[in-house]
Structure formats: C-alpha cells, structure tokens
Length: 199
Image 1 (cartoon, helix red, strand yellow):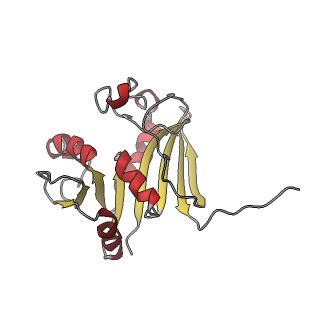
Image 2 (cartoon, helix red, strand yellow):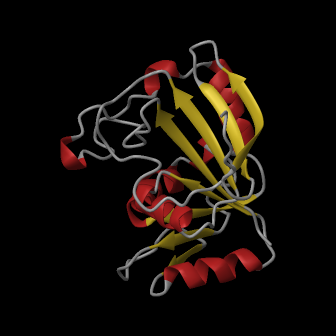
C-alpha cells in the first residue's frame, strides 16, 4: 500500500492559508499571505530539500494544482524531477491538466483515492490543498503529517484541522527546530484516541 503524506506549513493557531505569497489565496479577506517567508533560513531549506527529493507522486487539490502548474513547468531546475513525476489532481469539476504526467481524479473521490493507495508506487505527497486535506483527514487516508510549525498566530484563515477531522492518535517520529523557531515535526498515524483519568 502506498503511503500518503500531508506536508503543511502551519501557524501556532492552526492556519495553513497562503503561506507562500501575498496573492496566493486572499479568499475570506485573508491579508497575511507569505507569512512563512521571514522564517526561512539555510536550516529550513535543507530539510525542505530533503523532503522534496524523495521518490514521490504529488496529490493536489484543484487550486494548488493550478498554482503549481503555472510555475513549475518553467522553473523545474528549482525542484529537480518535479515535472517528470506523476501528479494527481482532485477536483469536483472537469478541468484541464496541462502539466505533464497529470491525471484528474473526480466523481467518487474518496473511493478512487482509497483504490489509488492500494496500488504499488511511490508515496503521495500533498502540499497546500486545504479542502483536499480535510477530505483526507475526514476519511482516515493520511498516513503521516510532516508539519512545519511557525512561531506566529494569524487569527483567521483556513485551518489544518477543521470540522470533519476524525479523532485519531498520532506518534511523533521526528522533530527538529530551526534557528528561527520553526518546529519541523513528523507524525505517523497511530491508532485510536486513548483516554484515562488522573482521579
């Protein structure tokens, strides 16, 4: 079975909206686009480069796919191999998929993703794609979370864990902290929520 990994930049209050630039996603009046930029340094870039170098396929929501497809075909030298790998794009609409090696997933998305996970192939990495991530979490399709937790609160914006996220246990499998205070924390799905009592 293929591993599905969600990689996400997240603020202390759980916001994942528009980490990369001011115009990336202004929906809902969000005005802090590009909030990760001041925290990136050599340390952070090394970890990101390592995570993005592994054999993988991309699994993206429509909006993130369109952002990526408008940039990476002409800037592939910045992310070696990204134009050759398989890209799966999830959308409720029939959209064009001009980026090479792209495949549209529509219709009964959850069933199709479950079947895709059962097939042989490299891990699937999810970037951005807030709506898709909610669907994956709600249907227990995420095997690992590779989070970059930034020392900032944004107040409002699209959240990593929104309504629909199922109760689930997670095990910390790796963590590092950058000089600028970004916590790189990787979690693996670990069964059900356990409870107890101090009484």
